Each structure stands twice: as C-alpha cells, then as structure tokens.
Length: 204
Length: 111
Image (cartoon, rainbow over all chains, first blue to last red; front, side, top):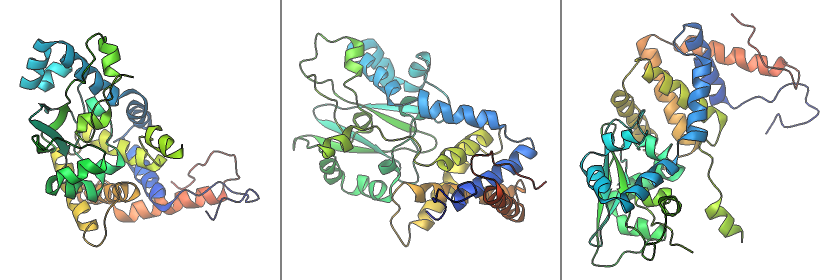
C-alpha cells in the first residue's frame, strides 16, 4: 500500500478500478441518469436488508405448511411475492425440492444468476470459474468439498440459473424437528442448503 | 479454533467499496431502462469467458473487474460515457485524492 503512510499529507488513493467507477458515476450523475442517493439505497438494501434469511423463511414455511409447499413448487415467483420477496433478479424463480432420491444443486454456468430477493448477492465461490465449471461436470466431487456426502441411492440434479430463470433448492426438513416453531426451523436453514451445496443444520 | 471461526464468520456482501458502487450503478441503470438484464447478463458472461481463457477467475476482485469492463463497454457503445471522458475524469479524481489534505472530503474541481 504505497499511500498507507501516516506521515503522508494527502488522502489515501483508491485503487484504479475504484477511480474508474467514480468517473462513471460522475458522468452519469451529471447527465441525470443516476441519483447518488438511489445508489446508496441499493447498496444498503443488499448489505443489510436482503439476504439468505428471506429464503430461510420461505423454506421453514414450506416445511410446516403442505399447501404452501405445493403452491411454492408450482409457482414460486408469485407465492414468495405474497410474502414480500420480489423485485430485482426475482422475476422468475423456480423452487426445486430435495427428496431422499434426488438432491438438487444450483449453478450459473454463464455468469452468476441468482435469486436475489431470497438469497441476496451470491458468495464469491458461486461466482468463481472453479464452481461454475465443475458443478455440472463433477457435482458429487464438488459436494464432497463442501462436506456433503450423499447416499449412493440419491441422484444429483444440477440446475443452471439464467437471467430468465433462477433456482432455489428446498432442502429436506431435518429429522427430530417436530416440535420446532417456524422461526426455530428458519434458523436451521443455511444459505448453502438453498443453493444445494450444503444441508440444513440439525437442532442442537 | 481459527478453522471454526473461518467457517462461521459472515462474509461481507461486497469485499471492496468499489464492488458495491459498480454493482449499484449497474442496477440503477437497469431500473431506469438503460438496458435490460438478460442483455447485461449475456455481455457480462462474454467478458467472464474471455477473462477466464488464460487464468482461473476466483469470483472476487476479478469478477468485478470483468463487471466494470462490461459496463464501460456498454456505456461507450451507447454513447452514454465515452472512454476519453471516463479517462479524463478518472485522472481528475486521482488528482483530487492526491491533492486533498488527509481528513478532508475529496471533491472534484474539474468541470
């Protein structure tokens, strides 16, 4: 860090791409095409308000309400919109349910399409070449690296999200959770379990 | 112990402030109809593919480099932000950072 010196008289210089982004912002703001306050709102939303907790609520509800689950599997977009989860990158969401016979996992082989209203912004590994290339080619190996080992009898189905269709995995409800409330169940649902690279936590 | 922390500490949504900024600019332009998202995704995946030919992308900084490059190319193609103007303002921001005393707000003097 060349400008990390406390004796240095001027302000810390941001990296080159940060300066290029600032240049774009300046041009677009001057042309009236973007509003800096709207940018702050977008960042705040994805940093603080939208995240896997939304998807976890949907999963917990599906675990406790068979009618909701059936509707969710039939038309996820409108069902989750009724819960308030809609908007950017959520125009067409499809929920795929894990069963003892079939485990589902989601990838975007082209870039990083992801159901933002339910999961927020994807983690770094979801965007990496390694995951995008290998999830389809060798899903069981990728799952093993995430610590997920499936029984031989279970097949693995990999769903490729696109800008038009974004998938969410409905994991299986863990055993011994009969007495739990929806909130307690939601706390067991991890982000990775809804991408299919993990399983829900088990109650302690 | 550290292994446990590594697995449970929440990851920041955006690793660098400029990742968040370029993301927000793109989302804002999409919402005001400057381009539609499938078009954006197609262009972005082309950039990722090109960048990934000679090295493996890790999904961090390199992902947002590709994002920025895609946005710059799209805005240049539309005539919305031309490369010469972007470079000029980039350098103006650099000058502003280098000449603003530490602790003061950085402001652009170039018009």
